[in-house]
Length: 399
Image (cartoon, rainbow, N blue to C red; front, side, top):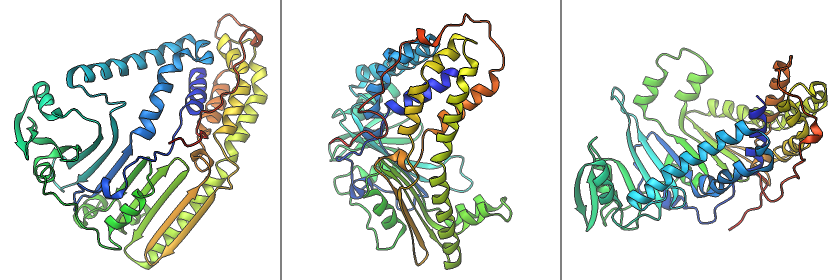
């Protein structure tokens, strides 16, 4: 458990989510949208994976990580596996999935009774000119061309191709074939439609978004065995539901089929905001209780003593990863649409990440009721690690 505690502290204080000023807007993300898709998932790879890979690679050399050999070994192995896959990709197809991929969007259509959903994956980044053709040599498939660019019909029946603008499309052959042509035009979005709601959320350039606009057939299938409960009502009564997370907070929209349920969702959203505010104080309280209890377990093992020596770092991290619960929040009801925004200076001002640290420490103390036979060391033998500066979820936004 000590490894979990230290890993949580280091990961959450080292990694960061920063806004990406070059992130695609709604027009770009939805240029190749599947109009009757039931779900949309979008991830800004640059703001998440790209911004944090260097931090992951350096973790094995972190001063605190070095004091826990088992943890350092596990992290080193993970880094080696990622690097191995990265090198293989660069060597085989000339593409670095860490630095060359900027964002990914998936459009998913669930056909009731079908063994699997239909999917279109839209990837943006810097790709080799003939990536489909190169992949065909390693994955197999029939190579073709559309408007002078290579396409590949893969063995599973899906298709891969690139657009005139260099966007990579993979998925249902019919969808890809239509969208890689030079004459493809983005579907229109009527005002007040589900796609217009999704576009509004995407224009905020979130690092993550998931949207649901299920067909009547899918709703009927998904709810038929749920009985009478709030979960069923939540699924059955929405025309569109959206959740988005950014570097400064979260937002969601829920458009109900009737005004009565919209008012219920307004109340539920207000309640959720209140719970989010309260959740900032509990982790701080648990961390303070845990740090107060830690000295009672001194000299039981070198691992416990390492945690005791790092208690100041843990406390600093808990404060860094929480706010005071006074983030700005609005809950707006407009007709049947409930729109919610919760915003602070950083994501952890709104969604506290420190809960995992406080719960981890409490859990560790609750099971550490006997010595493990290891040679005890004094906390003083572990060199203190100065607080980090410039990292964490509070890191300033950089262009």
